[in-house]
Image (tube, rainbow, N blue to C red; front, side):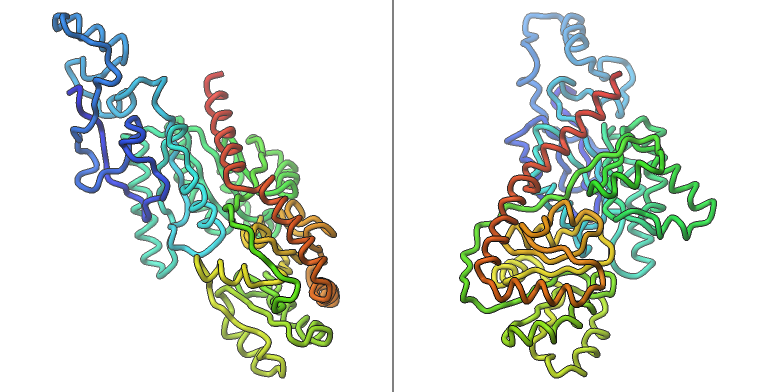
Length: 448
């Protein structure tokens, strides 16, 4: 059986991008194209790793293999779990990471972070599997996906034997959905990294009854590392006196080519995110008349889904409605187009974790006007890369917008500072090295 390896189909909703090819990294176990999750595939070439055993009798060859690999098939009974663990030398095999999060079809910041991770993933350091635990759609579809995710998770626990479980979660139902996965991983002895993508849980936590709070604390306390998005969130979680150490890992952003911006270009205020009160959408609309008094040709582009009908109703009653465009949810080429055409990025949110839209705007060289909530102050430096205003302060929003729109040179200066800060601190390659360091720390602690 020396030329066999354990293989199984990809059981998540989406196959992550960025996996290495077998020809590039023969030691990486990749998903098969289909078939039974328990089949053995004749693909492994052990000649690369075995010293020659020619000239040795059968007993000597068996002892040589046992000394080098502790191969389980040298015994009378073959154990599939042991095969999956020792099919290659332990010193050369990349450690395994099992990641849980929403399907890549789900709209939102967590999905964007997952995609960036997958695109930049280094298979020579850690082998990755992803299981989708949530999709948009009907409740029945969500229930079926959750059930499939649990089945896939149990399969990977038993037959793939992950070293680390990396769980992306937010508040409300998300943390309760992940509770069973965290408990099973802890019972199986897997190191757990919980990655919180929401702001602090004060409002959510206070609404819970005693049982709900007990479950939330139990889940958080099972983590080996609790990863948060900002220093503000770190401070809050430390006050809860959880057993798990709290670590800050900012969201990443992809590297983009510099955009040639002109001081004489059309003035566009861009906002990307769910249309809602929490994202400050209606504050943006209330600021429009004041901005148009000083910059009559300014256009406001609002990209995102959410309360589309309510926003349309507000616009229908305004004489300046022609200056506002509703873009819907924008992705890929359309997002690149609007970010390249914008002059200022605006996100006057009331609550945030660490909005990906702000990082993307800064990566495109846009000055940002936002609020000092969640992790935004870690990215937007007031007076250097943009301005911070208090949530709900419409007068301050219109004032800062008028200042930037009326001073193209200041816009270009802030935009250049924003791009430089992103490249130094939030570029995906930088964040990935910090993530791998967290994994390394978890595994080193396991040896102590």
